[in-house]
Image 1 (cartoon, rainbow, N blue to C red):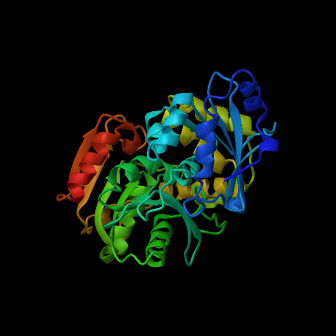
Image 2: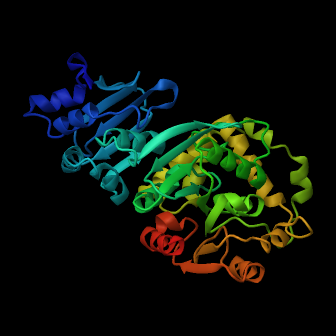
Image 3: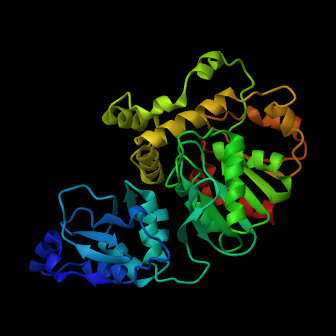
Length: 404
């Protein structure tokens, strides 16, 4: 750790004058444990703001050139914020495994950049074993893909949904890494992976990207778990690369529309590159997202909204989002190369998990899947569109039973 005493945080210094900071020793210990091989910020530098709610204890921590240091508070907004009460900070510093547990339980709140916040927690855990949670950028033939990995054993690749990131599979990494090598990946166009402007962003393209990731990691075969768009990508991998796939877990998977699609002619003429232009002010976009998503300021949902906005409010991220959404709508359901025709040829053993209250992929799709794949297993849960977060314990227990 590099701790610049001359740059002691102004608010922490004020707290010290009144009898000493309660949480500062814990923050110092965390910063001293920073391990760059576990996590390093993109661009080589990042500023995090750590705080104790309802107090004047606030610190800025800078990650730069492979080291962490406590730095002077600045008026400019940090890249990520982490807040917890003094007791939680002390527990995190004392028990190297409790940082992520505190985040998952809601005792520690990460906002603005989940990738950076969770990466910092992983890098200050004090662990250096190969099974630890770690963040790596994997350079494949087509793109640099940002990954979050933990555990050992049979590989299990987790693929997020439209507008999501690998962070939505943090509970999966935590729950299943004791039995599997879990690899959560940001698909190209999303999260912290590359966002090529001319990419097709359809299921076949994403499937090739995952195959290139497996090739680079020297993985011959892996189980797959995908949520929403990630479920559709997992199915495409099972259909186009069956020898590279073990078992499939599909969490509220995106499936080709079966009903009339009146906007097809217009969408075929509309270019996704229009997303490079932000037609609505940032404040308006944020307001719309937070109004349509229930509990948008609470826990995991708030972190997910932050992740979506962090990427969507960049030109390349917005263009990728539009392109992927467009491809979902345009996918042909029937015919020789139609989705539902191809689905009937899937050979991999599959578990479909449906959310009873899912407003994006209705439960009615389950009967169509049963007709196409009589051998597939199905599970209904009292949740919405993201079972691995909304019903984490039930979802991961079901996944563990199925994979075993």
